[in-house]
Image (cartoon, rainbow, N blue to C red; front, side, top):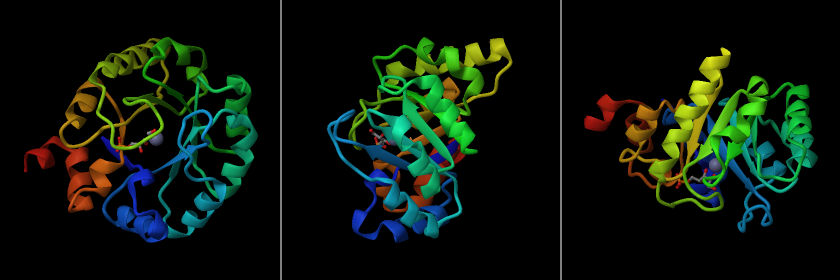
Length: 219
Ligand code: DX5
Ligand code: ZN
């Protein structure tokens, strides 16, 4: 299991140092939640913050766009230093064109599904995707409870990829901690996002290690 700590739960007044701290603690990706106050009620960070954080780590930036018109902002986030850009199937932009735009900038593209969206919604695009992100909370806020009933979608997407000979990573996001991560691991999740689970832990390195391996969770 790879771990992508969500910067949404960091100390925003010291975001650069927080990025470096979580890199040293063993993160595999840096997950950046972009919200526009329209697709979701909350407003968070934009491309200028992503660009500023780029100076603090070489880890891949996993940019999760929770915005109504992702197509319009791909260039801005690519210029800012994103490595992976994921956007929601429920957003307004043309899905095909947005994936192409991300790939044309040399970045990896991912699609995200909200809890009420079925797994099949991403099937038509799987051959163009690096990642599918299955939300395990309603997008918008950190610190919500993990929805275990999303796990069957992970299996459905994996089965469809297997059937078509595709290797697409599955990421899960929302309410993931040492208590819930084993359900993700059992379902076949490759990357877990964790905000409060990592940033509110007394020791971020221990929290990340626990998310990565069952042995560490026991210890
Ligand atoms: C929610 C965001 C998540 C969130 C996860 O809309 O996409 O990345 O920050 O936070 P926790 O791990 O606290 O649920
Ligand atoms: Zn996220």
